[in-house]
Amino acid sequence: MNAPGPKISAERPIIRQLDDAAANRIAAGEVVERPASAVKELVENALDAGAGRIEIAYADGGKTLIRITDDGCGMTGEDLPLALSRHATSKIDGSDLLNIHTFGFRGEALPSLGAVGRLVITSRAEGFEAAQIAVTGGAMAGVKPAALNRGTVVELRDLFYATPARLKFMRTDRAEAQAIADVVKRLAMAEPYVSFVLRDVSEARGKADGREIFRADAEQGELFDALSARLARVLGRDFAANAVRIDAEREGIRLTGYAALPTYSRGAAVEQFLFVNGRPVRDKMLTGALRAAYMDFLSRDRHPAAVLFLTCDPERVDVNVHPAKAEVRFRESGTARGLIVTGLRHALAQAGHRASSTVADATLGAMRPEPQGTMPPRVYQMDRPSLGALRQSFTAQAPVGFDEAPQMFEPVAQPSARAEEPGGDAGLTANPLGAARAQIHENYIIAQTETGLVIVDQHAAHERLVYERLKRQMAENGVPAQALLIPEIVEMSSGDAALLLEHTEELARFGLGIEPFGGAIAVRETPAILGEINAGAMLRDILDELADLGDSQSLQSRVEAVLSRMACHGSIRSGRRMRADEMNALLREMEATPHSGQCNHGRPTYVELKLSDIERLFGRT
Image: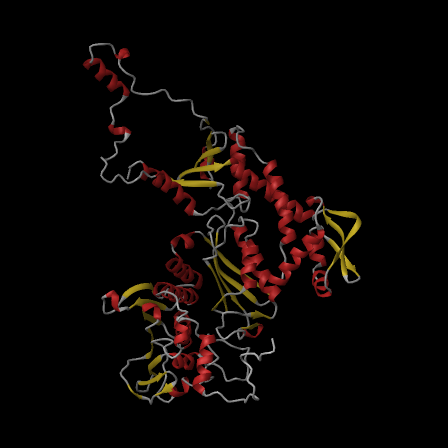
């Protein structure tokens, strides 16, 4: 215990000024974590240069080669040495670190890359000759003439060769390549009017120009149309077909983008993309707001899919929180969070009863026959002899009567179904959910539309309708509060108590009445709908959310969970037979009620099958 620490010298330590090469290697540890970080910095530089087309090539997951080619404004031979100096940039003048309109502004990326790898920059500005400069492990060579039509080519080889310890922490080539693809796709979503090409030029590929991993050509037209087309290219057509348009504004902050319907949910948060002033960010507060917006529509094990863009005055958001610029800090974080929650909920409500098309696709996939392989082709009913023909055949061939021949068909049990005769409801087929035609297994309503049929889960659908009705009543009349005979005193720190008291009015809307009691909190009222609760545990849950996200949905979610259970018990049960007018009334109410396309747990309440899809199932096309 008396031995000196291994990092403490017996002599007085001497303060030394690190040279530029060491400083750049230290900075590279913050700016460049892996090859994908280098790609992000270089592509952002190309975007800041006004590039309309960017080509990214890599080899061995970016460990041995990263090459970025753009058609931007380029640099002159005099600019190149300065571009490789620390904190040298053309994007700000240093007088205002808040009014930032570009991706980069710190002037650290290029010198950091040159300090840990072999970097070669070839560039040509309009009206100047092309020039090239190389830097290896921090040692810069002189500028020399080069051949290039326009723009800039940045080639980085042997990343981290100067810091070999970092190479030990690299993942496999496949994992690093996937990270590069994720970075490029995220930037491609932010810039729909720019073309992106990503290639793997590893020697093992055997092609001179490599294998094309991703391509997104520049989109045309209005912003939302261009963004939708770009998202279809990056995330797939299913997302674009099942997403609702978001366009909302509050107090100078605008929210745009696309958010998927609740029935198009994911098993993990892999399709959540957030941008602030065009910059891809990973912000805990913003992702929490996205989760809160879908809280009432998805179960805990499902995650929403969305691509959201927040745009505001640059002085209202600080992007200089971390060298990687992936984190941001809003001056009015509550406004940004509230805009996401209300904007998404309003857009999802406008979607009405709409459910994702993937539900129908999955249904059709389950109904299609399995591949036959070497089995003989399937014989459809129309190709089989009829029962009458079989009887005549047996009669003609057998010496005994047909009644003595073995029976070819077993009697079929009476199905649990009831059909309705088409009557005066012919006009109802023009409605989105059509006219009820039958009820099967006392739980599923079959409705006919002009273009196909709809299958409705009567219990799930009515459960959602009752739930929405209860929520409307709660919003109009508030949550009834139950006064405690003896107030419950909850001990906590003065800071936690002050944080809770800031939200007194919001908690009172949901029936929770609190007030200061010395250095503690006195709970005088609790939501009557929750019955007997542990007030202390609830307040601590609310505190955790306030500290983590800046807002709390804990109390609201508990109240709505009770309403959901009440709706489940008060809805039409499975097994109840419904008349035609009841079924049609249910369909009309679904069409008029927001969010009726999914039940309280995020599952679909109906499946729509187009007639053309049904005909393909029966080989009619």
